[in-house]
Image (cartoon, rainbow over the protein chains, first blue to last red):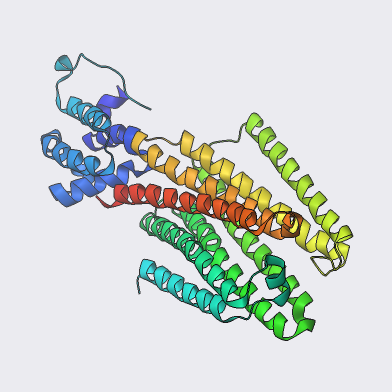
Amino acid sequence: MAAMRASVYERVVRITHIYLGPAADRFIDRQVENHLGKMPKALTLADLSQLIDWIRVAVSLMTDDAEIVDEYIEQLERLSRPPSQDRQHNGTRS
Amino acid sequence: MKQAPKTYVLFALLTVAYLVLQLTVTPDAARLRAYHITAPAYHILVFSLSIPYVLIWFAAFYGYAKFQGFSQLVSRTSEGKAHRSLAIGLRWLAWSLPIAAIVSAVLNAIARQATGFTSAALIIEHYVTLTLSLLAFSYLSVGTNQLMRLSRARISIGGMRALVGIFTIIGVAYCYITLHNIYTLHPSPFRMPLWLVLFTIIIPYLYAWFMGLMAAYEIFSYSKKTKGVIYRRALLLLGSGIVLIIATSIALQYLTSDISQLSGLTLSYLVFIIYLLLAVYAAGYLLIAAGSQRLKRMEEV
């Protein structure tokens, strides 16, 4: 229930934390402000697709491990899907 | 002036000062006799040995400049203070090599002109190296401790036992070699009364090395425990680099402070051991540079 109540921004940061640790919130803030031109807290589900494209580019610059990049993007894409379409949950890294 | 260019300008100045000193200072006659070489051959040897030494300094300056760049980027975050302390510690470690080498060359040159200054030169050299070591390891320890507190990580009992075990071996061996040298070598390599050596050289060195070992252990623990798959990989590079640097610094200080104990070794073996350690030291700084570069990218893209 807590996850459902959390804002889009908080859910994106929570997923990003699994991959970028303490740098997660700063990273998402920068992507939203610089590429979407809005305040991070004002992030909506409609912005997600564009944000994910930018995140893919940015994270690919940080690591050569394509598997991790794909896994991270997959986690983010799940946020924009309705719960009924998201039954293939296969766990995340910690 | 930006921080990184300032670092490289300092490196260039220290390098030029060191090379000029190596090429101009008249070699010690006793040393020439001991190594069976002439004065020009000595200068050529010293110059050729100075080049890899300078390259190692460059690796150290490069690594700490990269880390400093990262620490400035995260200065306003919760980890900012800890990374700043680490950057200062790494800076002192990087500077300690050229500073100690230049101070030693200048003091030896003065001592060759004024023989009464030999003891003073040796004493000053000991304290300069010790002060640099204390500064570097204390800052590193403060930084790693702050990171541990932020991540709420704790040192395991097993880890602490291993740390104390390693430190006891290093400490007892150092005390044995140092006291053995004081009692058997005339004049004493420290040129000071035993109590003064004990309280102002041996105890501070042991304290500095314990701080260093503790910092190495803490940064490695933090790197392993911190969250974030990509972040952790970058941090592991950084942590491994810091561990290598601390371990090699301690080994180098150990060797150079009790160098007379190695007098049975030939010149080539002695040079080989020291350069091998310096190469590992440089590798440590290159790991720091690689880790810092990745962490920095995380804060920039």
